[in-house]
Image 1 (spheres, rainbow, N blue to C red):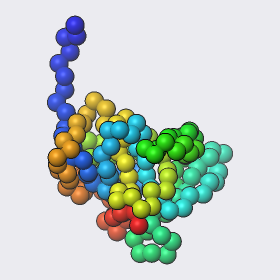
Image 2: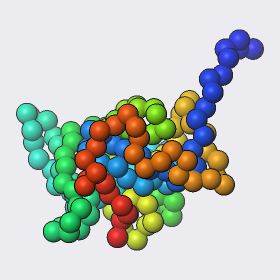
Image 3: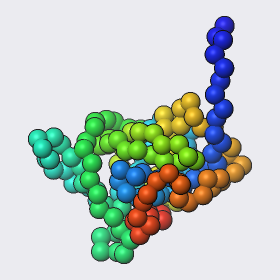
Image 4: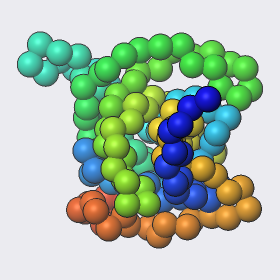
Amino acid sequence: MHSRTPMARIVLGWREWVALPDLRFIVRAKVDTGARTSALHVDAQWRFVEGGAPWIGFRLGPEGVAGSLETAAPIVDEREVTDSGGHTTRRVFLRSRLALAGVEREVELNLCHRGGMAFPMLLGRSAMTRTFIVDPARSFLHGRTPATVAVEPALACQAAS
């Protein structure tokens, strides 16, 4: 038997606003304990090399539309991901700090097209491990802007179209 005292967990609703400060935006996320990894909607993505390392550039929001955002990050990995419909695709993974409910941690997320989905991000269980639990009857428990993060409000991503 373990003598370890469990730490108190922070309750999340089934949907929350999360900040990705390394990418400089705030996004609505569906909190999805059925998904192992987190996924971020992108409207376009392109690869390039920076300092000899592979990078991915991507855009959130349609090209030329006010409020769309272009940013880039180093590619951490590329793996097969099976979606809830059983379809497998190869996706690019990157790392970013995630700020939610006063907690900031580095998470891994993959880029995919989530057009037609209500939420531009899925927050998977690996990003929640040992810190958060989910109350499926509640939503948006932690407000829109995490207090610990300075983000440009004009770069907030409202929803995938």
